Length: 234
Ligand code: SF4
Ligand code: F3S
Ligand code: FES
Image: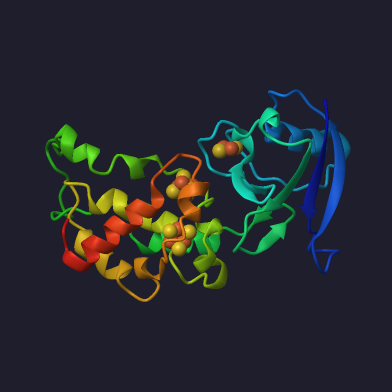
C-alpha cells in the first residue's frame, strides 16, 4: 500500500519558518511509522532530521505529533493510521531541525525535582540492601514506567505557554521517589513542587495522560503529589 507522509520541515540554516514537505512511501500495514521515516531519510531525502535510538518503545527519543496526537514513531503501526499521515515535532520546545527539538526545557524540569534516591544517611553506604515490602513497592509502581519521552509535557497547554512549569513528566518522576518507602527526600521535593512553577500549575487538562505511551496515570500521579504537598500525606 502507498501512504502519503506530510512532514513538517525546518532547516535553521535556510528557513525562516517551518513548512510541510510531502513524501509517497510504499508501506506494509505492519510497518511502524519509524520505518516510514527511515525510508524517507535513507532512500528519498537524506536531509530529514529524525531522533530515535532503540526502535522498541524504551528509549523515549522519537516522540512526534502524528495527525495532531503525540506518539512514539516506533510504537505506531501503519495499519492503525490513515493513508495520509502528518508528522510534526513535539510542541512547546524549540525546534533544532525538522523533527528534532531541544529537550533542555524538559530536562530542566526533570532535574529540578531531584529524581534520585535521597536517604537520611547520605555519607555512608548501607551494609545491606534497603528492604521494601511488595505493598510498599506497589505504591509507586506506575510511575517507575516513565521513559522520559516528553510526550506528556509537550502535550500540556500550561507548558506550551510557560516552559518554567516543571511539567507532568517531572512530577511523575518526583512521585516515583516521594512515595518510595526507602526515600527520605519527600519534603525537599514537595517544597520544590509547591513553588510557583510546580504541581499546582497543573489545571487537570488530562492531555498528558492521553499522550503517555507507557499508559501511566499521569494526571492521577500529579493529583497525589498535590495532595501530599497540601497534607504531607506521604
Ligand atoms: Fe513519556 Fe509517559 Fe514519562 Fe511522560 S510520563 S515522559 S509521556 S513515559
Ligand atoms: Fe497539563 Fe496534564 Fe495537568 S496536560 S494541565 S499536566 S493534567
Ligand atoms: Fe526508542 Fe522509539 S526509538 S522509544
